Image (tube, rainbow over all chains, first blue to last red; front, side, top):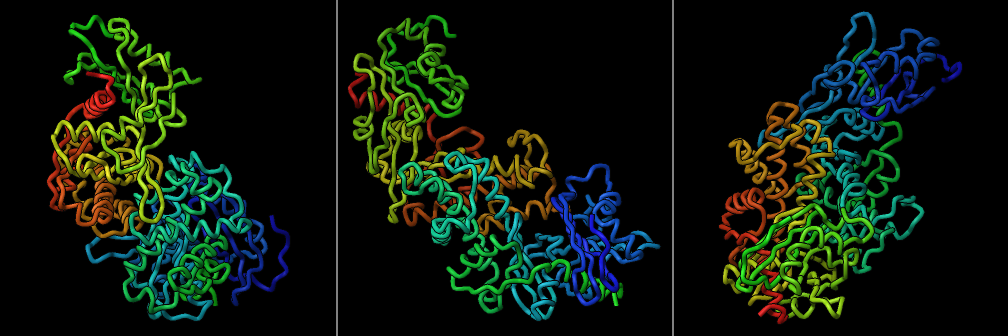
Length: 317
Length: 317
């Protein structure tokens, strides 16, 4: 646990609480993070709905030192399976719609849950995100942008189109999950090394990754996946290079699909990458390969997004 | 085990021996199957290279009754990890090249292993198949075709182009394996029923399957996979319909990719489906959806292919 925090006042306890982790930041009104903590207490790891206990374990001392600090939580904690449901807000949605959608389940307590976003495509089929919305709004604010494409790599990557500070639509891609399944559980895993190693440490990984991106441009993913095995059989793709190649094939495919879905907007707007360094690095080089220079999002985008929404809601001065 | 077989003479013991099963047929020279047996003794289930013992367990009585019967085996049993390696034969390859590639590891014993096929694409990357070649040649012979496209649905589906009775090239698709991974191990599996049920028994499955095929034509697989979850969240795709929809999405994507790879040939040649009934049924309706009528391959195509190769090799009169 944290010790006494030497700060004039904490104005917000911001929680980024997803399926696999809980990240917390105690913030001042001007966006300074005065204390930070995280744990593996994601939604899936919490037994018997012990949300309150989990929160107290991680942040109890902060709340003792700064009693009454408002708490705002984003992520799957606000889903139907979470602590309290904050129903999806429909796109287009900006800061105002997000703030209006925050749910306060206990009248006497400043504990709020940020809604996720819902997009509806022309054919009536829906898409959803939850947790990424605060990252998008945080990055938008920090970068001073009005309109941009935000790319959030991950298990389920999101591409969101923001126009005039409102998310107008977005697309999900199952890239990260498919990588994990193929890397660990498919026939391809049989010839791959157990350990991915550090992709930054092996220059060959960069080459293999880009070779995968080139393959992806051919638009025949189900076929090209098997070529990893066939090449391996004839020594054309060494085992150590196969994970990066697979990553390139899938990320390249995601970028190809996203640009097809975005149409002209895909190259007309600035593109901002928000996510962890290694994955963002890979996306940046794959995007560069198709002629797109990506801006990198700020650190702690989700916490800043939460603070902005809290202010808009009048929760923080 | 089988009892005494009432047949004038058995001329060939044909083995279709893959990674997960062993199928055996005792055949007369004119293609009659006088006895048949199968087991789960695929390559992956056999400890300590006990191939001989496994064969004797399934077919020992036949070999006692018809001593000296030639044995010809196709499938992964002829791979590097199998009983004896029969190196891949390069396309284009017809009956003669296949027969010439059969490996007889024991000089005193008529036990042969059929080679797999290797294709090389314009960019130098390879593709391989092993076991499907006897199905293709068997179907070719049985249907009396000279030129056709053969589609073999499965874990790793194969599309082979045959011209003048030679396989000129082929393409592998990881469709079946991807279905199994997504159906059982992805986030999509969380909302699907445990049991697929019988797809023939539920008319709704046919509709869901075709709806998936329609989605596939949009050419954004990584994105559309997630739509199964999003639709489920809003009641647009009931849990019971999701497996068939996923199947349609993946098989539709395979067909889209295959037709792109085949170019004009894809619609200029007859298309023959070789495989189990339920899967072939699904492929047939997905192909019909894009205007292609498929011919169905014969039963026991692999055994007939083995007999034809045995004859070509002079092993059977």
